[in-house]
Length: 434
Image 1: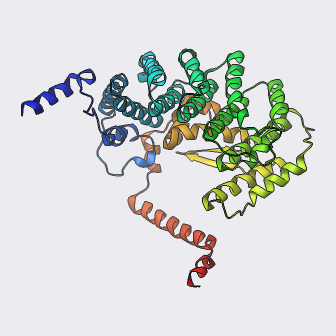
Image 2 (image 1 turned 180 degrees about the horizontal axis):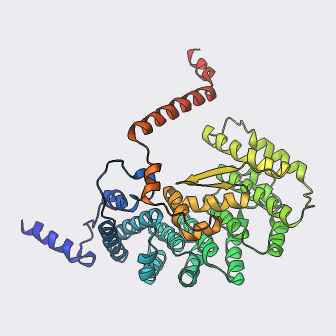
Image 3 (image 1 turned 60 degrees about the vertical axis):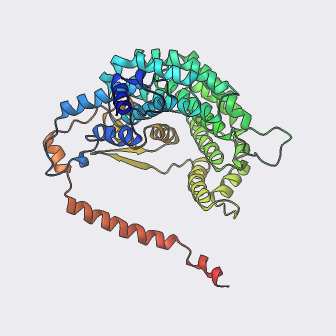
């Protein structure tokens, strides 16, 4: 009994007084209980028809109280506790707008992130880099975000270029560097410096002149992919004269990466090529690519790839992407996509917009729709205008009864089953009987 009493007292004293083997919160508490407060108002459909009234002010206070605790725990002596706190903050930042709360604590958060990236191990560094992205997304473009990037930028560049750091940490820092620079940088010199840092990483994936058998994947391939995608994102905000230079420098080299044995590298190279062609044709209506026939032949082969030594999932994903890439390169066409969020919808009608959307969707996850509705920065990036304010009457009209939702889901399930059955090859099982 005395020992149990001592443990309880240590837990109540705070993070500093906890022994290493005591967890301040469980994964379930961090991800499920906390986020029940974060996501409750993110979607009008989440309101139940006859549910009890919720005290929003009390819920917000409860959420902020927990977030303050997580911020304190990012300085804990236990690496496991720090990482769990970072992940909990990431979940909250991705699913709710917390501008005022973060504004008051931005320097504390920045210091904690810097410390975790500098002194933490691989998983902690990845979590801290992800939180840095979300911190800038929450703050948007402004003086405060510039201060954050001035502090974290050099640390991120150091990790990205550090060959002794783990590949996963370098990959996360490369992504973070590109996203944060995209959000906050008005200084063209800093933009070019960041792009050069990323460029120095992914050019190592180019084959040497004497290599003619394609590109083999290495442990650093994931890093090269992240650096290439982050660099491509920054290219979309460069002045046209710089875009021309980069196109001349990389357009004839990127096709070599289509022969890489890593499917994600092939897809990243293909999407980057499509975007470069789009930008090149915007800068010069008479743009001409000398090796067009060879390139389209490669793209067509990837769009119809049926090699048996590749996984079915990889082939399906690759064929889908390269059909669109081939249309972009050969026909200057882009298959418009529609993204619905709340009562609004957004049309993705070019590769630049698709690259930007995919990047932010990757870091925001399921919170992307909520941020598109409420985040001023993202709405500005995608030219959506000010947030649409919905009153209680409008929300009520958008509600769907439980029975209607059940009927809709049943119909969707039936249609999906029929569609999938047509795609299945029923002859695939015949060989088992012989």
